[in-house]
Image 1 (cartoon, rainbow, N blue to C red):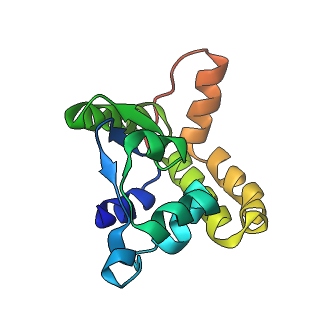
Image 2 (spheres, rainbow, N blue to C red):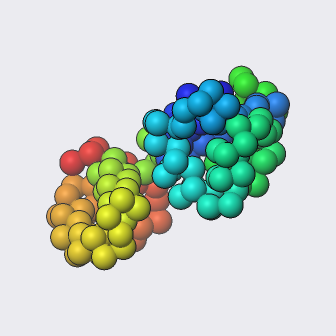
Length: 154
């Protein structure tokens, strides 16, 4: 339960089975979440919702995890959750420019960890770099030709 939340909080997109259960038990063991939940959980779910679960150590269900933003989607069961997560990853890997995906993640993490101004400073250099790549040219060309882009990661 506790490690599951720590792993979940480290992911960018999260899918859970409807029957999944969550808990941050450490407070009931005389310790506290030392894998980052004390700062990641409030950032993801908001202060009040995070403190509700971290300070009580009580279990909560997938519907609550979805309500507070810990998971983005719910699936029927474990295999369906894995299949849906795989579908999302396949969509990203198959339709999106790898250099763009890396840059989006870097920008979002930079903003989250160092503030918006740090990410804003990177906007122009990042976009100039992406436009100068083969994938950037392919993206523009595919848009003008109204077709799906074929990206190579270059």
